[in-house]
Length: 193
Image (cartoon, rainbow, N blue to C red; front, side, top):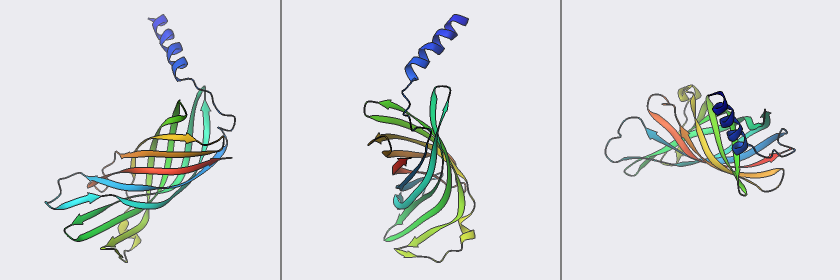
C-alpha cells in the first residue's frame, strides 16, 4: 500500500508540475469588467426574465506564491455583482459593489493557461439601481451586507512575460439574500511587475 501511495504521488507530481516564470512571485495589477447575471433560488412569476448587465471596472492587485512546486495567485480586488430584470416593457438593473478576495491557480495547455479561482466577496454596501434607464436615489445601507462566494473557471493568455489577458465564467455558490445566486462572464488585462 505504501508503494502505491508513493507511486501515485510521484506520478501526480510529474503530471501537474510546470515551469514557473521568473517573475511569477512579483506583484501584479489587473483591470477589466464583467457581464453580470444571476439565477433565482425560487421560480419567477410568468413574464419575468433575469438577464445580464455590463459592469465596469473590476480592478485589483495579486501576488504569485509558490508552495513546494505548486504555484498559485492570491489577490484583492474591487468587483461587482448584479443582474437585469425585465417584465414587459419595464427593466430594473441592480449592481452591487464588492471587495473580492481570491486564490487561484492555472495549468498550461499549449499557449494558454486553464485557470481555477476561488472568490470570496464582501459587500461594500453600495452600488447602483436603475429603473427603465433612470438611476434611482437609493440609500447605501439598503444594499445590505451580503457576502458572496464562488468559483471562476477561465483561460489566461500570456501576451509576454508581464502582460496577460484573462477571461472566465463566475459560478456563484452562495444564495445571496436567500433569493439569487450570482454568475457571469469576466474579462481583464493583467500586468505583473
